[in-house]
Image 1: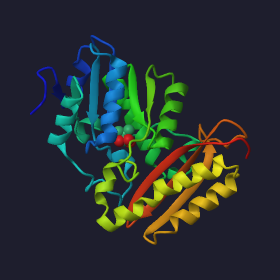
Image 2: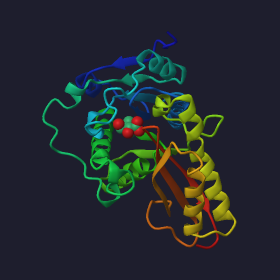
Image 3: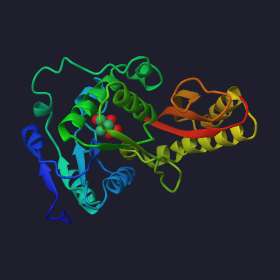
Image 4: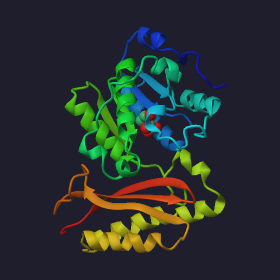
Amino acid sequence: MLRPMSMQVIKTLADMRALPKQQRRAVVMTMGALHDGHRALLRRARQWAGPEGELLVTVFVNPLQFAAGEDFDRYPRTWQHDLSMCAEEGATTVFAPDADDMFSSDQDIVVDPGPLGKVFEGISRPNHFAGVLTVVAKLMNLTRADAAAFGEKDYQQLTLIKRMVQQLEIPVEVLSVPIERDADGLALSSRNQYLSAAERRAARTLPAALEVAIATAAGGGVVADVIAAVEKELTVAEVVVPDYIAVTGADLGPPTRQGEARILIAATVGGTRLLDNAALRWETL
Ligand code: PAF
């Protein structure tokens, strides 16, 4: 085990609350099954905290953000591997509570994500973002971190966390970390391991469609052109079933005539739900 002497594992809320805070503290919240996308978050958080600062990692598969019939039970659990990666990236503490401790009383107070929680992912996963924001707020309070790193891969989640922190005056700096991709372009996700080899090949149509979207926008296309081009690209593989394709502003509001926009794609590939997104730049809409 590569764990340095200084990395401690905390399993209870009581021990987490009792952890003395000595330095700048950054946190990376995860559901485990760590991959190189998480590694990028750990590096960004470590960079923010500085060599003397504290880097906390939370590992908790949050039942509140899974609906009945989703993959809560089969979500990959890779504890020893996760600990090794945390140690390699200089984590000082790993906090891995169990669900009974996290939600020991009836958790009937939840964070309402507002209208932005009801669109895109919120349509097919109606209570998902209330579950995410509730656990993120709780982990921010428990860890008392000064900064928290989240990936752009889950762009709606990142945007909602920024809005929650701003609107509820939570004293945490949110660090946005760009998407990490495999050599074939697929955005890294713990759920990629559900894909068969054939599905994995088909899933490459998502990043390919984003490339087409970027080129269409840069070449003078309007929103409808971008969406049509993405739809066409996604139909190349029959096993890819698009859920939504959306062009928005960088804050997920309506796209404006200038500045950065975002293209979001959600699709099911052989039963596995995949998300991807990219920044778009254009002169005219
Ligand atoms: O992005 C994730 O892994 C989860 O949604 C998070 C932020 C750890 C909350 O459970």
